[in-house]
Image 1 (cartoon, rainbow, N blue to C red):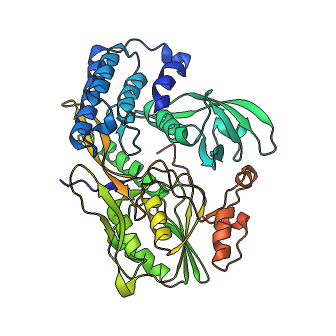
Image 2 (cartoon, helix red, strand yellow):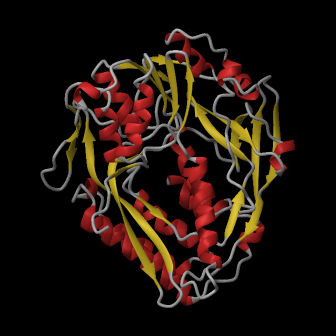
Length: 446
């Protein structure tokens, strides 16, 4: 497609993490070859140019964009590891302090599984899940509060940057954690990651009989399975677990066809990072008997507002309850806020992430026969809601806060979903609610 879809998705820590939290194994890497440094410099140049050409604010919020670029271009000559190089490119984009403007680095020939997941609840970080068969299984537990991560305090602004760093830029073989149990006991743990070596170069020409190509397809299928839409029907209530906004019109019509058979729809947008604008617009159009303006788009030039076109008499006219948490971002936040502003339903859970801009992704490539691929997400519009405010760095405050405790996480209870069910006229115990949509791990052996 020549026209990129509009996306509302989704590191002051970056440079300090790269320079001070490397393991001995990482710091002993030999000095990078000149051609590798040149690749990093080209990535910096590509990021600089994409922002210069496409960022919604020509003035870059008053930042001297040229100076930032040239400073990091010089710094690139001194890098001694790939992690430092990628971190340098990421830090250029992070100067804008924009949730939707960031570097998407080349994929690494290594899959790293830390064995646990983290989540913010209110202003505190917790272990939310632990993977069986990993070193973490015997050392950390769901419900443990994270006091520090590799000597850094974890808070709302830093958690996504931390995840970005250790998952995309510089995977670490071990993680030093200071944890506090639900009972208040503090301890230190060093958790070893589980790694899987992948092929350094993949042959996508099918010259190998298609082995690499079809393996890539299998990997994609496994990933898509994890983020599939799921639902549960209880009497007059449909509970819809929506992992991200990636549905086309036909799929949306299918799910709302099920919803229309019920009096209440509970839409679970927790940990939903966002997705496509057209999915958001169609989703909201299914809930109103009139067109609704989602937001005004503010960019370099005059832009049309985001409008949800009503399905008219076919719209779902039942009750809507929306669940959100600190992992709800972008489209999930816009959806929840429109529901509030239009007084269409109730929003329950935790304050959302406040990562609400509109962006496009620009793919880049280096090399001829052997190529490396990377990309940049660049914000092309700020979004101003009907109340005249932006959700960026603010988020959506739920109508009713329902926050799980560390003990709830330890016992796999879901008090927020249980409360939503109660408002819908159902009796659903938190323990039962926690079993409706079991978490699934991406296979390590694919």
